Image (cartoon, helix red, strand yellow):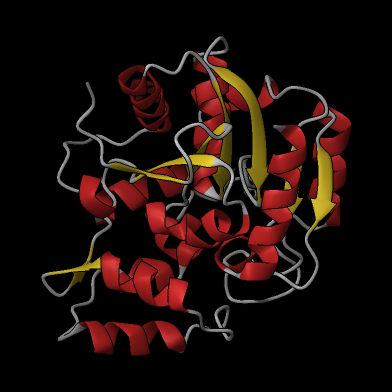
Length: 270
């Protein structure tokens, strides 16, 4: 039995998919997907160190996140399932498929999952990588309304929705965001690669799809995977890159437009 918090969306008899959120997110990052794919049974955890799982002990390596996902399948009596991961969640999905190949039937990557390039001689800086997302974790907020107003100024979230209200409200507890800063920092460094992650990425199945956003974390162009990176990974691993137009790293899952694209791919795969 796992102590990890998770939620299920959709009908209990629908096709199953496990949806794994990003580095400072929670299971509510998938609200728009649940609306766009009401026939799917979406199992969405709060990863260790995030959301309602933020009180679980560290450390927080990708391997532990991957094993936590499999523990949820064990608890629900599910022999195997496809995984969809966004951002860091896509890397967790790849590690889970590598460590537990018989438990993961397929993987859909959404703007993440492949290691990020780092110039030679430069040490990974998690705070620099995540910028305002990292700074937010050290802040306090007097109320949910204040936290909403903070988020509404985010350059990547110009189209505000009720799902974002729910996501932001859930993320605040006792005036602080619910992601453990040290968990974020550990996983951000891993985004550049470790021996375990490099092995998992190298084992990505040829033909695996990544839905990618043309814009990045701050709505900038290019996004996390510019043409040179897409060409590199397509050549090295046979990854199939599919652009979701007019999205950024957040809205590719947290907007109706992005979620509809993810839902379409999942529905066809399942």
